[in-house]
Length: 490
Image (cartoon, rainbow, N blue to C red; front, side):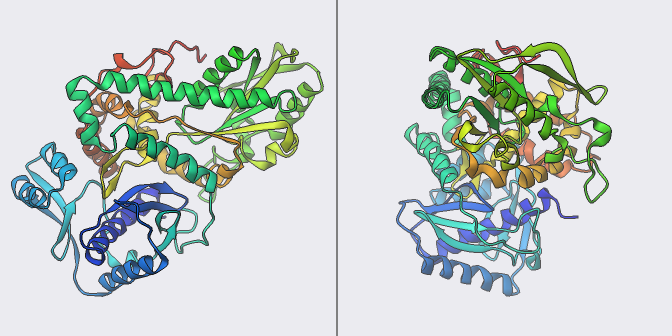
């Protein structure tokens, strides 16, 4: 069965070949692999000059020629001193900084002919597995597109998400303004002690964005009194909702909170997937009829009972407490399915506001290697699962493929349904998470069946100078995962 990890290995090798092809076709110019978007990665020239269809076709032609010839793609070990000489000679500043921090003297490299780069993750060396990809110009750059976990045997027709792209690019530009685009630059701030100012600016950006969303929601009141907050796992939806409530109170409103988790069907009734495993990410896990009926009753001025799901017994039930809306109340409904039209249309699309929350990391390792947004969320989830749910890192890694597949199926297709987007990533959070997660991963048994993925994450984290969690403010969204938040999550 194809997994997210298998696809990631193929994507990593194809990105390596794309960067090499770009240097060959456009000598003196550099390609920046910026961030994930739809079913691929968005890339652009270092000077932001346009990439045309002819450019993309030429690059794809070179890559396919390479895949058709007999030159192997190899994984080799080279000494740190030899690689430093190569990268220093080529004036690759960020790559040189990464090599200096590499935790071993022999470094795994990916090699194709005389083209080499360091290998930070499992990569696919079988050329026959790399034939499915597509290059196309997009906006001021280019997309390299891949098969997905739902269609591993083909690249699907392109589906655009222009609002999402604009949202991601806004944060990328913010990172550029701060001159924090790579791990090396972030480490400089940790090393010199100037990281505290970055913490304040990052948290200030969050507050400014939340306040702006609250202002807009207030302007749509009372026509839209229900706010859905949705997003993938470990995005920080709960803390976002609490901070949104504060900003709404500043504007004179009060809020009522409803968690979709409390409207799960009983665990015994959860449907199974094609492999016979219960699908906890499915929309059918939600008792959507009961939820929408009660939200509709609230809008009519009626009283409804509060509901709680007992995760120990796996059952949900009403409590003795009730909810009724006062004159200035706004209902905030938080859960992964909040953008699904099957939920929102029954209430009337003109009566709800929809917010998409996700951690869209704007930090790159270097121009050729991106720090995956899903890895950012994985780190958050490892910490939260360990501290508050009594799960080991092995448990979290074992569940991650299923979680990611559920996101691709039930969340990502509806991103463009959102009225507002909020990026919960913080420019300084990875050094904080690295200090907490690395000791946990060091204790993982070498015989664990996903040890290759564990080692991949360990390597990534080893490049960060650790940052003590004391720098994190008490109401920071990051506190939802690392603990000691000033918010109550009970």
